[in-house]
Image 1 (cartoon, rainbow, N blue to C red):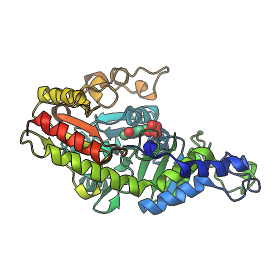
Image 2 (image 1 turned 30 degrees about the vertical axis):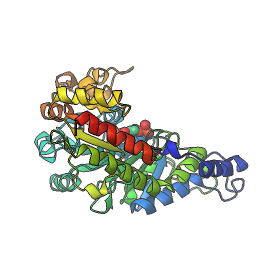
Image 3 (image 1 turned 90 degrees about the horizontal axis):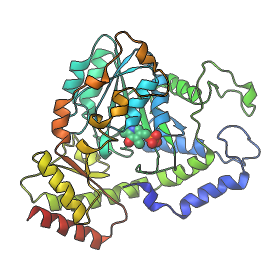
Image 4 (image 1 turned 45 degrees about the horizontal axis):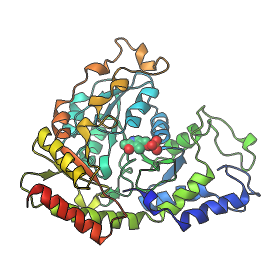
Length: 396
Ligand SMILES: *Cc1c(COP(=O)(O)O)cnc(C)c1O
């Protein structure tokens, strides 16, 4: 699955270049750094790879989400429509912005169902935060059209889907802003890191300012000469992390090719069973193939399949319904708004009650979904072993 499997000489060389100069900061130190600007190089490379006009790299995917929400002006009391199946960071970011997460249903794409999003729109809705889960796309064309007609800001959490596309266009470039993560289990890693992309120059400038205490970065080599049109915070990436990300990004296309080959082999083994279906992919060509997700007939069958896969050495397989990181059902701490301080949305009257939120149609999908991570390190023999084990489990 992730880039950490392919960590080598290329990463060491990039990091070595930074260590030689000793300039670990992404701004300034123009003479000492001897022309080495890793964060800027990573931003240019991401723009080129994704076909995005602007990119700003930050210290994590979570920081990317918070930066995007801030740059888009989403704040206290605004409603943001989100899916119940994501990583907790998506929801944390909305709550820390003081905004209200409003959960819509997912469908067999494992991503937001545009019809359900439409039903959740109120006069306080400001944004839809779509998450492209497990390497592949939501029904992004329908969500984009809906947001356009209703005057809502579309933000894409593409943390799990770098390199995936819909009809040839990179995921993350459909909304006002797209967010990526380079944490250790993502498609490429920088140890920690993230990025926002946008086609809107004004949003880009607000993002780069917000992520660096409001600096306008117009002072040249003298950081003290920068103006501060807004206040912000510190979500900066270091040159060391950006250097790793740069080396990893150069491997992205090879990573995607390998994942797609490995996934196709696993999928072929499953395809022989009439009992199982696959996750719906609105554009199978654009799948980044980090996971193969099968849909069992019901929860009992899904648990049985998960257990059998683990026993046959094909695990870990994830049954998201039972998972306490990725699905709303088990997010007790978020439902209770258990923060160390009082969140801004607690001041709303009435305050939103996340304990009572139910997503029955999403439950029905999650109860059936079993996902297998696709590894880069499998060789032909290992792939064949896995295919044989899967056929044995299915009795075909
Ligand atoms: C990983 C992830 C994030 C957060 O990224 P970090 O770099 O770990 O902060 C956000 N959303 C989703 C869907 C993720 O999978």
